[in-house]
Image 1 (cartoon, rainbow, N blue to C red):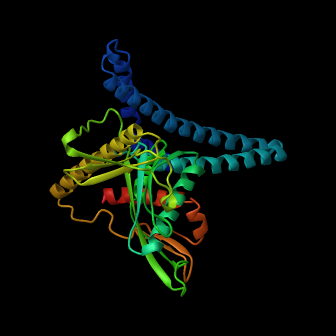
Image 2 (image 1 turned 135 degrees about the horizontal axis):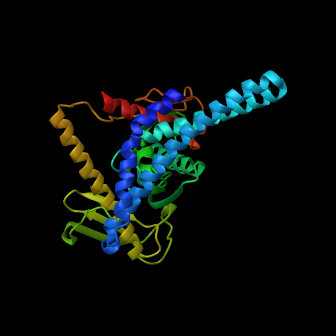
Image 3 (image 1 turned 90 degrees about the horizontal axis):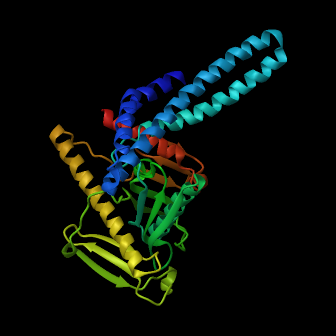
Length: 363
């Protein structure tokens, strides 16, 4: 654990972090800071983030020091009072297990150092090849991610859902609001594959279906993504639920198309057209921000001569027949309990994905 902590400490660059905090603290104390509210928000947000990062790493170091001291006390106590020494050793073992878990989380957090990693995430799931089974699979994935967020106490908000005619969904977009939600969930982006006996096939044949998962960082008010009005096509329509049932009697849902790129965003969760329009614009800006970031990364890779594919197709397989197994094809991480995975037990896959991504960057 001490070795792992030293690696975390080195990656975190505590001297640099302290220097950043000192600089931002000086800027935040400037009397004219709030003359520019957007700039002030950036400064205060960066300061808060840097302070919490420093505190998290230093507290872990203090916990390691304390447990080492407690272990030495237990050994000394055991010589004079074996029973008391035994109790203290048991407490040391319990604390070590707690530190192991928290240190693993801290190690993962240090790998989330991308430009937008600390943002909230917007996830879009689309059914792919496989007909009604693919639509059902897309809905299973939506529930899986919502349950994962619920397990962690993260807030979620379904922003738009397009229901399929027979069962499942054609697509869905939802927000996960949590620290580092984007950095954490971005490793889930890619093509997911399901193999099972189709519940929609009266002959009980095995069916393979696909769904695509897209993860983008949520736009912030300080991001400079301006979209001219002449680049937007906005359509309004009536919100609908499963089976086409009317949710309300007004044309409150909004479909926003960015003409230069062809990106389309639909929103119908809010009660008014104005609210849906604002939500759609924010997600569209997020998609454009992500697109700009990907283009910048592609240029860097091209200049570096890197021709390796970044993700590829079929990043994870969910096999329910003839055996049960969920396996990530990038990391090799696999779980035999498919029910627990579909119920949101994804931490093992996400942690392995973050480590895999970091390893790919280091190569």
